[in-house]
Amino acid sequence: MRPIGGGRGGLLPASMVAHCLLVERDRGLLLVDTGFGTADIADPGRLGQPFRAMVGPRLDAGETAIAQVRARGFDPRDVTDIVVTHLDLDHAGGLGDFPHARVHVYDRELSAALRPGLRERARYVQAQWAHGPQWVTHEARGDSWRGLRAVRALGDDVVLVPLHGHTRGHAGVAVDTGGEDGWLLHAGDAYFHASEATPSPHAPVGLVAFQRLMSIDDRTRRANQERIRQLAASQVDVRVFCAHDVQEFEELAGR
Image 1 (tube, rainbow, N blue to C red):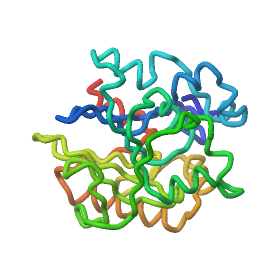
Image 2 (tube, helix red, strand yellow):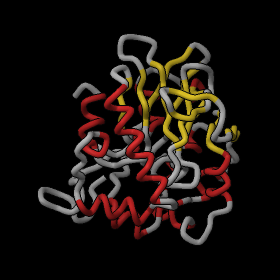
Image 3 (cartoon, rainbow, N blue to C red):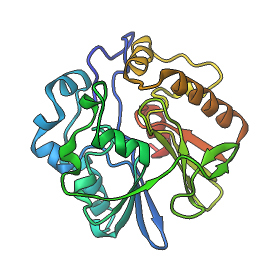
Image 4 (tube, helix red, strand yellow):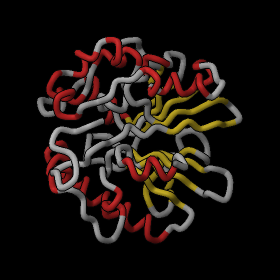
């Protein structure tokens, strides 16, 4: 994505990504977020002109989750489960490409998407789940994970962490890599810039303003950002990253 006003010295980053995870598990493949889907590329108009003008998404079929699943030698039906951090249009667009998968989401997030309030309507695209997903809802209560409230959504290796604020039911998704790399925590849109997960955040001013503008509960969002900073500083076996930072994506992709 190439946001308007982005670039060196700009108010926003020059580029952003939609960072998804594909997780191989004994019981099948799992996706964390889906980015834009093939239907978004076939009909960009459903994303809305304001969003496309402001965010500048590169709608390339080769970058969709389903294309990349196939490129790795898998069948899309191998994806048995999808866990979404939230249902904003740039995170849920690929749901329709995996109609047989169970879709795990916090109950309050699904409620917001299906029955959005006035401030929420522009961020959700109902057509992205018109196929009728197999929703699996979770309540934001249960166990704890590294000192945070959590729900062990799909066993001990995939954990939903409530990071509300950006949306009503926004979540982080923690995945145990099962090896020396420890845990990955996909923090979704709980923050947007890599520095915001450090003790000295210095995100572009436009990005800070955008997050405040988009937040349903900004006080809770900022409190959760502080929790993320504390977690990143104290848990050496947890790698935290967000959905849109290019630097984090490139490092984790090994580029």
